[in-house]
Image (cartoon, rainbow, N blue to C red; front, side):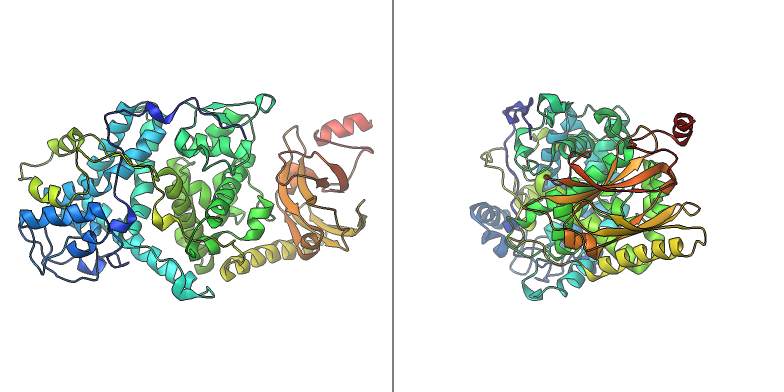
Length: 587
């Protein structure tokens, strides 16, 4: 994949120290969110008087985190801001303090997290000034809506912990499964919030996104202009997947805008965004040291191999996709912010009203996508210039900021040495391949397939086609309900293919649009699957081809079989064309 960058990393301002805190500086603390401590009192300096050591890092624990933590500990002792029974407040406690109007708490929260937000902003903006303005906008919103945001953080952190624990219970070694620390939980909430605010600024014309150029396939494919920092991280993607993911997540485009930019159909872009995230998950599973139960439940090895699967036929409209039972398949598009506010409301409402099984699958997929995106796009934190905090605080109340306390807690200084970017430890979780599917996802998928089968079988006028022969061996039986717009195909004794060759299934459109892939299958997988079909009226045939490369964008190999989804009116091969056109040719 050609991902040559026209925007080198050196475009960042040279006078901005590259730094930020590592996960180790927080790992001494509990993995709880600190929710139960939100009611705790604070002293005049903003410190909680609750001396509990089970939430957040203590001063001694911070000292054990490395030389930076040691300096932090010594400076804090010299400042005399806490005694033997005192501890640093957690980030969630600092945000709760901000909701009470405590500027010291807010300033400290800023100092602890601004490197991640600013680093993300630099990756997304065309210029450093725009990145500074957007970082400022993020923290202004955090201050102005601190009470609401503190509640959001508590709820999301609790949900993340519960979901992680539930999936960890399904692991073979549940005690070894990854569970996020308090700092990790905060970033799971903060990074998506910051990304959405930045994207909204792009769409409102308040900031200029990074300039990306789609490279035609004839010139090598892929996308030019990517920041050098992330080129290796997204090299796992196909050319078309890298294009749509970069244009959506980095440049803030909706999936419709991205479709227009790359010249593809909206349903195809939705599939590429989802499948691109699946491939990004696969990169995580090849290099992580801990088992992440969320990742294992969200995507399976089978999903990675197919890069597009059965029962996932997107349409032009998000609401229609939801009505067709594809809510969970839209989780990655939601996490990428590749939707507008109306579509977000549709998805949020659908998830809120979904049954427990679908809601759990949705939450798992969204959380997995956010963790993967955070690993890649916040792995290069950059400390913003010192004046930015002054600007953040400029329009706040006249309360004394108490910068002595801020400096004692903060890991950032103006003389901080530039360090090599590091991947956050919480995102480095397992070196094992994903091999099992969460039971709930299986149940949901199986039930969805059964519903379509039952609908097709229940139509007395459904067309049944038996004995459809495949050129590589085997037969297929199709049941097509034109009245209901659904159908299914059952394969038997499918011929084995050599090497890495697979069968790829395609819905062939009635108009001049591009075929839509239903994924790649081995012979045994085709025999095991009941291939369900939606949106029959928009397609004329299901075509089976033999492909040497998984995830082809259009049929390239030999046709192994074709199943008409409507009555044939002409003989010979067909590729697109409306019913009226076929009838005119027949006459």
